[in-house]
Length: 133
Image (cartoon, rainbow, N blue to C red; front, top):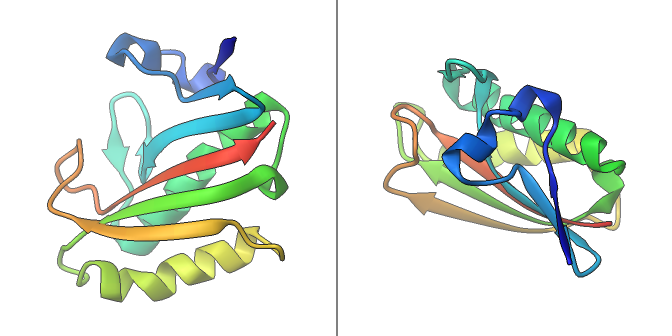
């Protein structure tokens, strides 16, 4: 059995044929979130640090709608596009600072991947997560 999790601010996501998260098998599978400061129309935050913060903020909305917090996150996959700020090597310290603000030990597993591009032109980061619950 699976259950879609959709915060009110993301009610339009199913129109794109995906859910912000799906609860199944004791886990919460969170779709990737870009670093958007506005969802409709989509407006990216300025710069890598702001996009990372915005993507985490959107994932926080999804977690809250599911009734859990950062402590439930067991895995993160971050996707990074090379850009004017240098791509994955330059974004690693920004990600590590963002993780330190949100997570305590035991830390979630984390994989960072540099990619050629994301769904929205100008997007520098996308965060996908797996949580318990």
